[in-house]
Image (cartoon, rainbow, N blue to C red; front, side):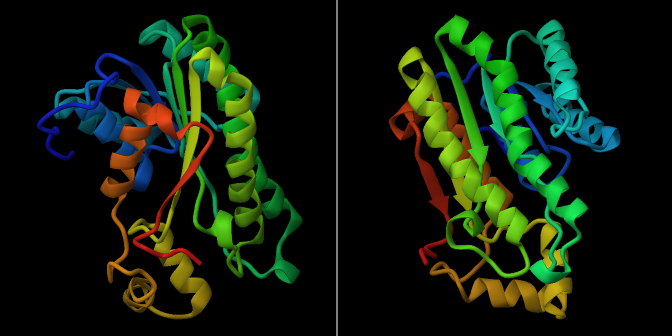
Length: 262
């Protein structure tokens, strides 16, 4: 867990935050940063052991964190998960839709069942979670829904048709959602990470037929900063969007791409 910022972001202390897909990578970093900012963190992962591991690490660093495993693609599991959070921590005030699934495959070879699973997790999952927590946010006249899209949802990428379709859909879902609820004090925003150093890069390398280190080197040349990004950098932007200052980005998708813009 990273060291706490010298001065916390406004409006985060004591808030109940649900981070989906927080068992590893970007989600775990987001959960850690929100814990550093004083949020009470509900850690979600499809895999119970990973959710428990992240929550334990956060508690070891002084955060109030609890594990809530569930499949976000299943509306009934989402309902039960959020009910458990409400009983344990209180109503969800900050939702970070991060859970995602990517299977690299050319479209002609794509198994329709895998396509459906990616759409279910990557697009329907954020819908399920947002729909479940919205009533509480609207009743409180305050809430933040921050959704993780992707640069691939803006520019596309071969071998990732379903993922790109879902991530592009999240951009428009964010705009539409904020148009519905933004005036009631619930701000929806998104961010589009570029290439980030997570376990997913191994899958990218396998699809490209090169080693992981070669994949990282190739990706680094595509960014103006000359390196791939870190989960902690994404977490910092999420924390800002979830704060009071983040309200200025209502309905927008913020690219966090190391300067890559195409």
